[in-house]
Image: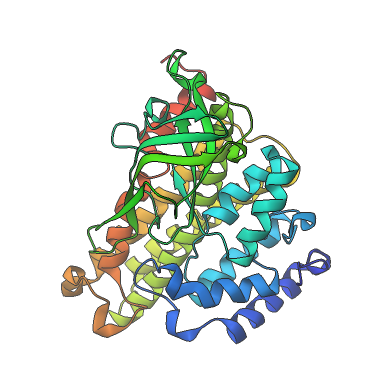
Length: 384
């Protein structure tokens, strides 16, 4: 497996050319610019191509099978994937669980789980939100009770992205009800193919089924699947939320929307319109600012530094830029704005689809209101 040992030695232009050439030669054309989130059965060929190449985990250290790329080169990879219209993978294992296990997992857990993420044998989903615990995540009620060498899990998780594809879930569970809510939470790795687990899709506004709810009825999980210390999972949960906000704050969605805005403007005959050019230039400048902000946070992770509460800035910046671009796409789409399917069957022209995808982007992973409260309290030290 080529884990990218020499790619950091390339200058940025050569690295970009290398990545672009390989993507163009290896990306499956039938799933380019998909109009919806693809299931693992649909994007598996791309997942396995990246796995064979050693390019699934650009930010992981090389000793764990990652590429060990600099922040700048990770950003270049994101830009090239978006430029080509590459589909998003089932990526919770690479972007969230992997970095957390590298930091907090035992040697046995790293040896067991990390290679399975990179090989595609384990597809992960995230079990955080519940019907009564979304923004107030510390209020979760799904519980795990120790019974000999197993944890017995009962409860429900909601809005679990791509849970129907996953064979594993990393989840927060309540392991002590007698202490204050943040102190009685643990981090557990739960197989999805065991008795007592039920997964049901939830259709979104586009009639797609990437969200799910999951039910756990006396599910028995080996004791060694708990990560870190019992009842001290909240610290890891906050770390993982930082990883999530890094991922959700990547320029991926906004960059893709801006590229589709350009295609739409050409189709609508507005590419040379002065008003459009002015709006497009502002979006491009905002994206450039965001790219610099994103690179600074990735660089912190590469240096082994903790992510502070200011990582919330990243999630706000990206999700709200994505929404602004999608709103403007709908504004210039004219009579095509009401089409739920791509214009004339062209997957590059899907303004209503992107508009609907942008609606929840300022909600999931912590709403913009919650993110602003975090910044106010923990960065600006404003009163509650």
